[in-house]
Length: 76
Image 1: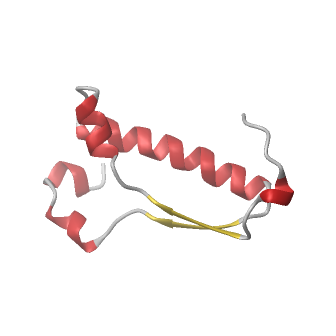
Image 2: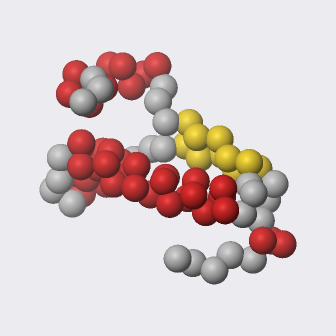
């Protein structure tokens, strides 16, 4: 894991998950695989924030997302 200088960190971090489907498409993977990779990435960031006492807010799903294919928005 990357070494973080806590003195240089902001007091509040907001994360907007976007682009997972496009990332997967560029790699010839399914959109679901892209979403799974996004989960891995955000988990790493949120864990690092928690370990450094950062306030973190995650924006992961908008109203527009409900218009996506059912297999992307239905719980597994």
